Image (tube, rainbow, N blue to C red; front, side, top):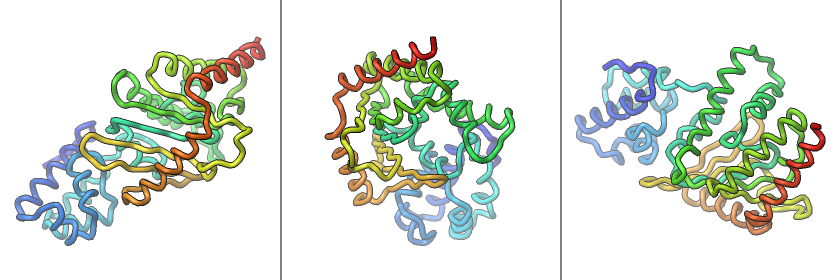
Length: 274
């Protein structure tokens, strides 16, 4: 069973896992015990939402006597170029029915404009060619397509005031970026909440947090730092992130007041650009 590098690869890979598991007479729970994986992880793989790592793939091959299928075809699942630590979260993001993000320093990738994203991608300490940067840029802009559907997902963006004030790319780029967020907020496509400087310490000081809910799966949390990120599925860990988000949200400006502030800052950038 060959798997080509296309958007359906993960679904085909997951379907093959389901077929072999059922042929072996195993439930997801039974396979999870034998392969030393969580049942939830196996369910995600079968649904095409996640990919196993190399060690997982090898154990699946061994338990299901799959002749190396799962390890052999693992590379075909890497269709999009993203930071390795974010790849898993990106898969979830595309399936979420509700997404709540907190951004302490930069506009979240799903809300970035082309020029803003270009500046961010070119700011890393590792040099990259224009070709590589353009591929990364394409992936980042592709993420914004989840906002094409007005009804799904429901997106809340909580932004530290520093996100508005840091002049990424200069005043023209920032004006365009903030006007983009403003338009999404005013059209009710997203909810925006700004955490103002004068709040001081708050519950999400430690870094980026994304919370995701799904139609038929438990919620997850994704937390990120410099060159590192982790998806949390353990209910107690997810709940802890949700509580921290709610506490910080209580300190943030309302949606309407946040839009007013974003509009004011965008106008300042516009005047500066002129």
